[in-house]
Image 1 (cartoon, rainbow, N blue to C red):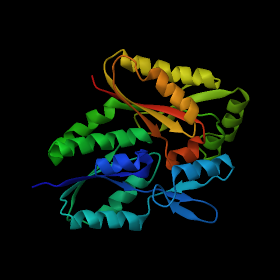
Image 2: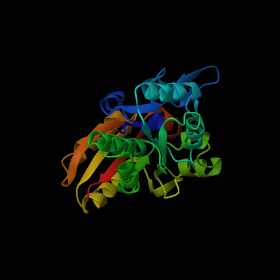
Image 3: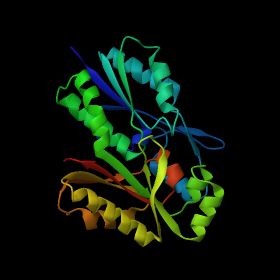
Length: 282
């Protein structure tokens, strides 16, 4: 008899309520300041990180804490789990995928499947939610593995920023490109490609145009059929709420939720990020 668990990392941006409801095990990224260190969603909240960012205090992020990860795996063994599906942030953006693999090798009693999502942020969480749903539906470990590639293909994410400052400081874009972008008031919409790298899906000038472009992107999906939609807010509550209210009744949206961009991604996007995660259901 298979007893299947799903593990992801805190870059998934799922709320604590959603994590608990869906029995998802989350490995917290480390949020590192010059004089202190925290575990994402465990010992520090998104609200505190965004407040620090707004005040010019910019931490870095690092791999999930090894001891915390070890404790989760031991807990799963103690609770009688036999199989584990690990849904990880893109291996081309983080060393998390490889570090979890290495640690799990120390616990061969469990059977693992490591799925590199080739993305980051809420799309990782959306994939983990689909795995959880399959587990609830009594799908076998083998069936879940078989379905994961198509689940990944059905889910996309797009995020725009209020400033390029944090991408520049985090080394995600060059200083020259970031400075020129700021001078031209460019607001890129970032997504991830098939290899799991971030890339500018498009660039527009000005905040209003960037949000309008997000609507256009959503409409292009909805023209094809029904979609599950998540609106993503990174300390841009008023604008993100207005965006949510404007799109929530669009034809072909099967379900829509309002979510927070978590600390691990927020360190690079900064306050003022707005995004979409879209799951095609056609």
